[in-house]
Length: 244
Ligand SMILES: [Zn+2]
Ligand SMILES: [Zn+2]
Image (cartoon, helix red, strand yellow):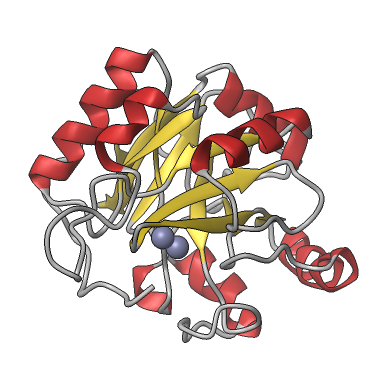
């Protein structure tokens, strides 16, 4: 296991601990995180990078540039992806998308979304595939259909994945031969970095991040305690979940 990286050791060239799943008030009405508060909160959680994955929308490059510059000066990498929900027969199937330069629509099947993302050079991660649905039975996520879908990775560590969900997600990643990731799905500052993804090679840009996922050079980690990021998902630290 790689050693943890303290604030002093962080440099723009050694960013490896990244929260791949973050929402802000700017574009996600269900989030309470002000973009202006994001940087300090992320640094306080020991994150080295984060990806804004707003619901159905990619941050505009000019707005992102302002935030990214401010963060970069403090050694924090901020990138933008998106979270897309495909609605099928009342079921919500969520995906994290990285490396596609426009906002995508959920008004298509998961298979069509996957093909579209790959056609545009991006990667697509099954977000919280086994998160129990609040609408009753089933999942708020792709569930067992993940076995039929050509996703690039599986979000195994997520605050609303209980132990059974984590095991199912990890088994799917193993059987499909694709990597597992972690993300906080933060809608409140307190949740930032409860889970994250460790990249085995430094990430300085979205192409680096896409390559890391595509090549399987990632592993999920849970929020650091005692200054370390833990690769073993022992227990859950996540506060109460979000509605979206
Ligand atoms: Zn989601
Ligand atoms: Zn989310």
